Image (cartoon, rainbow, N blue to C red; front, side):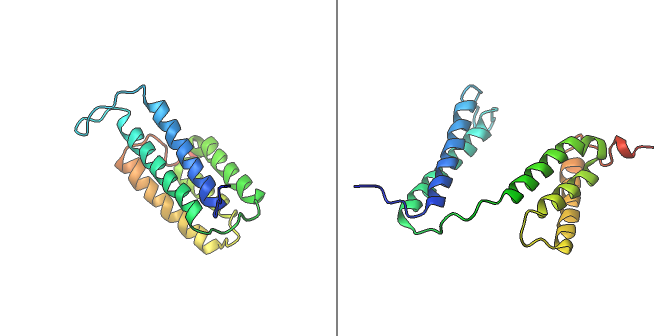
Length: 153
C-alpha cells in the first residue's frame, strides 16, 4: 500500500523543519546545557531545535491528512533579488551604515514581490530601519554604525 501524500508542500516543509531542528540538536550537543535558572550556551538552541522538530512532525502528519495546493512555478526573480540584497547588505553595512544599508535591503528585496508598491516599500523600509536602530543599536548596543565611514567627514 503506497503512502498517499495529500500536500507535497506540507510534506517537504515538515522534512526541512525536522532536518534543521535535528542539525541544531547535533551541533549543540557538545555545549553545556545548564539549567532553566542558569542557562548554558546549548539551552536556547536546544529548545529552538526541539520546537522546529515538533513543528516539522505536525507539518508531516498534516501532509497526509489535509489536501494542499500544488507547488507553484519557481520564481528565479525572487530568489536572485532577495539573495543579492542580503549579500549586498552584508557587504555595505559597515561602510554605508545601518540607516543606508537596511532601507536598501528592504526596497531591493521588495522588488521580488509581484505586488510591489513604492509607498508600501518606502514606509516599511523607514519603519523597519527606525525599529532596528532603536532595538539593536540603542537598546542592545550592537556595534554597527548608523552612518558608516563612506559618509564620514
